[in-house]
Image (cartoon, one colour):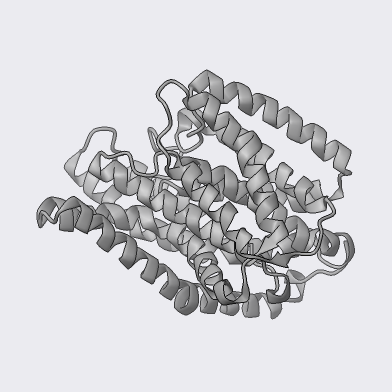
Length: 355
């Protein structure tokens, strides 16, 4: 999702980091049985929308001229897979312990092995009785990210905006129905809601492409760029009135988030704040990819076993996983991706030219 530095959107980077932190805090709340950032599941829709916007800005013209579809997909896999795989490996402890303890809804040993093999290939685990990715539950959205990236490189970039708009409206209408049918938009991680996840990525990613194709004024550095960041945090964190979940989820997905993305793309953080935005952008993907299995291990050891106060445990985990995410981004993910890219460049077939 990274663009060259001279085209980097620091405000959007910061928003992506805030959204990832919101997801982490939501899952901490689940461990503590507290409503913390209760609507941070909507961050997934923002991620999909932002992905469509940034990929269209960075690669649409290149796909039409010099970048082949196989090479683009290869680049995206190199970008996403190392941390995806690390998250899955970290999740083995939880799955193995559940299998050994014969916990409710756990898999058999054979089922866990098949699920691990599928998940490591970035595929849903058919052997899992409930979630698509039992080794790292949030990975379901990364699977959909790869699917929509492939669709983007094969056909979506070729479509005129009017056709994209038609598909976007169709996906949006079905998603609107799904939100009111289910009562919320926290859909996609379970087998029972997997189809709705396709609607989420379809609508949001296509809308991101359409926003990227719209003519925008040159970005201006302004403290006003903080407003979309604050608004996004409030959107994910605010407790909403009971009984209005579907209505507010729909407003967030169809109105608020497109406006926030548009505002974040049109304004830029002042130069003195841009390093902080860059850090938030850098930690966002590793934070999302690894936090869930680490959270379960951490709370089992430090909260349930050592009985740390809930607030202290939560603060320690956020601080620790944020630092670890920065470290992994620079000391693990970047070197591994450079190595993989170098290996691929050694094979002429890996870099076809032409459309």
